[in-house]
Length: 392
Image (cartoon, rainbow, N blue to C red; front, side, top):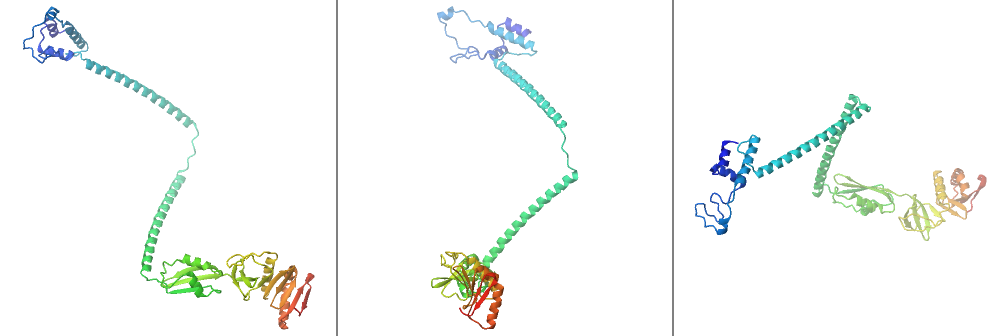
């Protein structure tokens, strides 16, 4: 204990500095330095004490100095000078110590975790080293793969750019063509028709709906083709442009194969069994007798009520025509096949017999022409027997 402390404890009359130390420790004393409860100062004369207050013993402040002494001793032990006990500082110190302890515990836990991870990593590395290593490809092969991959990427990039360029060019060209068409620089001035036989060119042009002075670029070829395909004899149609002023129509017509009599008219049928038209006269088309149709509307399929022998008749007629003979009419009635080579020359018999002697039938027709015989009946029996009668 230094001299200043002995003076404090021996002499209760503290200096102003020591009083400030006490106020720092215990707070402001409301009874000191003029801080009276009623706001008056020490210099004012105090009120006369009551009898009870006068009878009470004076309050001793010795314990304050005792606490100050202990605080001084504590400061002396820690090597600090002029240390006064501060509860707030003590609380802060305690909190700092607790935080330091928590940080130390966390650091220790983290260190343990790192040790565990290091041990686990070391174990994995040992297992990996112990396992067989995969075979590595030669550097040249790897480099070749890289070059190929880069080459593919370059080609894809070039292809994308090319497509974009072509699209932009196409848009530009279409825009220019539309502008030219709108200005009337490529109007239709001529319409040509090719491939027609049954229909006239005027009929086809009228049905197509194509007109002169129409824009050639904006010509709706699909619509025109659809209209042409509605014509019974048209099998296919194509519309093309020939700049600067020509529209071309190309058609392929159906070929009539036979005619079927139905009531007082004939139905013209092609090789796909499609009814082409309904007419009063077959007009040189081979007539097929004995097969009544279920429908008579042009454009529909020819379906007979009974189709027995129809396919054989058509095949036989085709074979006869290949021998250079014409076929006016064929029929199949009551099991007998008849082939009219002309209107008045007929060959009859079983289908098998006639089909087997088509070549001989050609020789007979040649002989009849040479003799200028216009009416005859040729009967072909079994075993190639052929009889001839000038009567019909």
